[in-house]
Amino acid sequence: DDVNTDSRGACIVLEGLDRSGKTSQSTRLVSYLEGLGHSAELWRFPDRTTNVGQMISSYLSNESQLDDHTVHLLFSANRWEKRSSMEKKLKAGTSLIIDRYSFSEVAFSSAKGLDFDWCKAPEIGLLAPDLVLYLDIPPEKAAERGGYGTERYEKLEFQRKVADCYKVLRDPSWKVIVAQLPIEEISKQVQEVSLECLKQCRKGKQLSLLWS
Ligand code: NYM
Image (cartoon, rainbow, N blue to C red; front, top):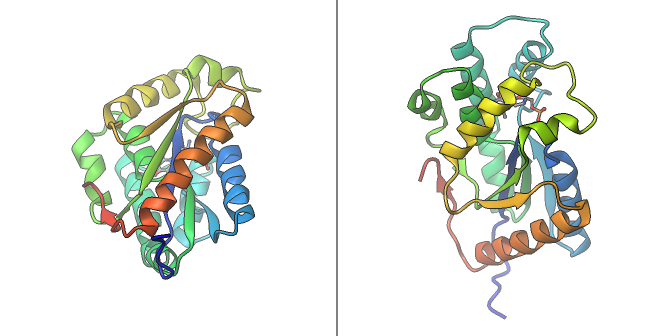
């Protein structure tokens, strides 16, 4: 068919509230794509393995306190430090399945009351995903799923605000999936749109930048 052999990988982002099932679904998607013979990697933000990521991690676990703007810029820096390797991987043909990206950043920080446009600004120029999968769950239902952990933000009241901010961010290109469906059914939907996305990338869809 019309598949070109040196085509790039797809950049697929999973977003949603805490406990919406992103981590399970991104793990399953990577196995599925690998099973079909595609090269795929699971990434997540924050990437806690870097120096910046360690600062974020200690903030999230309440071992350190940081100004809201400062931590916002750290999350952003954590994506910027991975930008060039993201681009390299994608251009080398590996698809990246990313558990949280810039949309989490804007949703969580604006839920704290930071200005929406200010929150978006440091993300300008990062690679835009080819597909955003939003696992949609009412905050009350997410809270029932075995309860939250002890990290910052894992509180029902705050997650309600985050859900409202995601609604403002959401655009028609996002694939919204009902996160309360059985896990197999969600996987099926995730697989279907992801394969279609890979196909578009193989046909020559260009990488673009946030926020376009
Ligand atoms: N988070 C995540 C942000 O506030 N800004 C960001 O840019 C990103 C990527 O970190 N509650 C928040 C959302 C989560 C928290 O993420 C940790 P995870 O997926 O639980 O490791």
